[in-house]
Length: 255
Length: 282
Image (cartoon, rainbow over all chains, first blue to last red; front, side, top):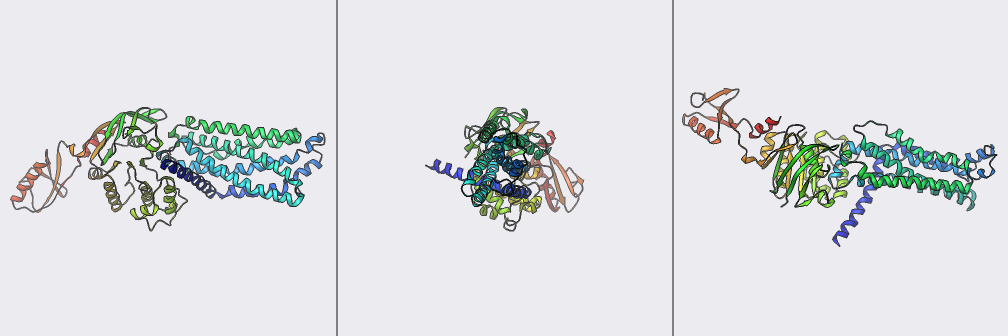
């Protein structure tokens, strides 16, 4: 019973620590949060399927896809990569926090408390995912509301698909970027920098296909391809999480 | 009462050993002073015991159980490193609360213990190095542990606070194992009961400090008159310096001086018995 109590308290503390870490990350550099919020409103105004000034509408009327009538229906899915991008941006402050905590000895102290490399990676990974999910829920609700106001329940289905596929790819990409970045940062002998450009480059793995998929496939197929893409990235991230204890020796987290 | 045991431990970084075949058994609740020249392996020893570094060979045991195998056992050891390990964007109180949420304890208690009340509302980033060190030490006392590993806890602290920290550590050591590294030999001999001397990554000495005897002692005497014609002493600065092979010889010399009616205002040991051991490695 006492052990169960201890475990319950432990997981409660764990959740609390993730919230604290997520908040600390956003507090360290507010630029990324501001950028992500601006992007979120940009997606709402220009890429929401119910928006009267949506860019995807301009693309299809300009006849770019005139040779592929079926593909026109998939054009609204262009909103997916633009939904992923700001959530990817939100990982950067968490990675910066990880590097900062490593250099001031906090990771060393966490290790001395009995945590493992994997525990530490999971703490920052969960914090990045929390930031991304809160963002997704907020702008998801805003987009759904906007669609409903503009087009009634009819506009909700495409918005839901965009948010669903975008959310899946975003969460997978965030997990993938975080794991690769933390492993990269851990393996650096001295602070060589380059974390941000590398994070952005890696993020393109999740974002880039989204710019082409709507032009290459029919709507239903495009959605399926994006779901497979998200699942693949998630699988790679999970493998990295599982192997993190073996990939990186504990001393790599020392200042 | 706890027992910390190292059995033939090799440990280091990037699979290259820094510590070689280190073995000792510490079971007396007291302060074990860890001495050694820079780069000898003191911090590596602490990190290995704390489980931060995985041993390359050998075992670290606490109360007969292997530390590496148990998260819970590892959490019964606390390590104060050279790094402050504080979230600098938080206030002092919030930083302590941050750790209290993680490991337990009452932040206000350690604020009171380390007299941090005036600092508790300040951001960690606004503190001086010495103040940060105080906060960093405070977090060590949040939760009671079986073993404390304190790596130069009084570095950067003013003498008054260093004394307070030593008093807290001495109090703590009544029923805990404390491993305490210091470059200050007087502090080491003042606080320590046992000595762990590390040289070139090897255990050079593991003994009670009281068993460590110098080959000779230099005793400084301040007297109202010249004493060189009474005892075999030489004037060196403000002291008459006397070389003796046993502490008792100093007592006999003092008696001779006093019997001649000379007033002795001060008598002290000029060298620390640990100096000799430390110097050999240095």
